[in-house]
Length: 142
Image (cartoon, rainbow, N blue to C red):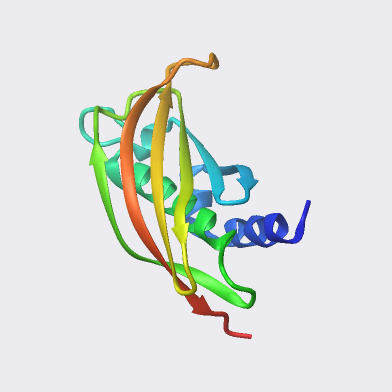
């Protein structure tokens, strides 16, 4: 594990919300991060779909951590803004949020996110949400 993978892994493990959601870090690469989340009735809304807040949370984190792979040394990252489009109900047994950096400068990273729903353990999925996000690099408190 390289230093950025370790840094993101430690940060992810410190997030109470990701633990509450049952989310796991699945991939950390330069400019791209994947987060998985299993279906849970505890995360559903009144129609039995996974709640939009849970879906938004995992894709926001995927975009943020993707941005962090491009952050200057001694910086953290926070969301400045995002827009999410839900394409269909969040139905599935497991979900994969993919965050990708489209452009990174000295103080901002523009990211895109996608959430895939899988009905079973197979490879077939449906894209249920898309995100456009701006992440801000902030000096780390040491």
